[in-house]
Length: 184
Image (cartoon, rainbow, N blue to C red; front, top):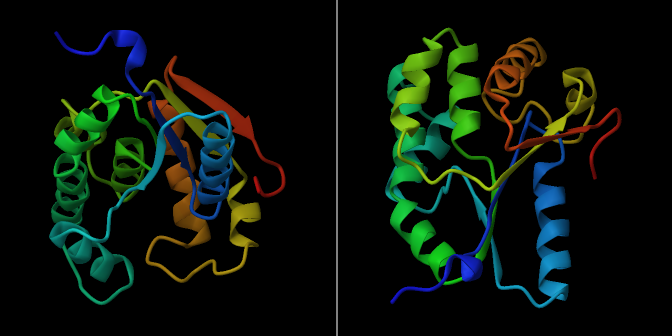
């Protein structure tokens, strides 16, 4: 007989614009839960260590060019290639804190003009998060953070569109944290 539902780890996803503080908040939650004695791991998408992830990394750092549909499917494939490991870890009672997940893929790709429903389709069947923490920062504030502009999507006008598309994805699993200054 498998582990009871009570021993399943939680899937906690952090979403938000580039430079909104996701990585910082993920690290803080990881430390907090470890301090309480929980088994917990920090994951990040895209996972740039996989072969698909390396293709994504080259695209994000402007070292390659790909059609918008193609890069969207690669981002989705990067999540799918980690799905079985994610499921095994959760079943083993490990809580996963994830820096970006499928919501990012849909928000960013649809902000580029791809059909919203088409963008959601490849995500169907991925493990649903127990909690999505959305760090809601004004795009202008995120743009003031160090390192902004180093990657393809770190452009103020585009980030404003992404923020609008994130709002379309919000559901009852989301907790929105308003960040009027950086969420560090």
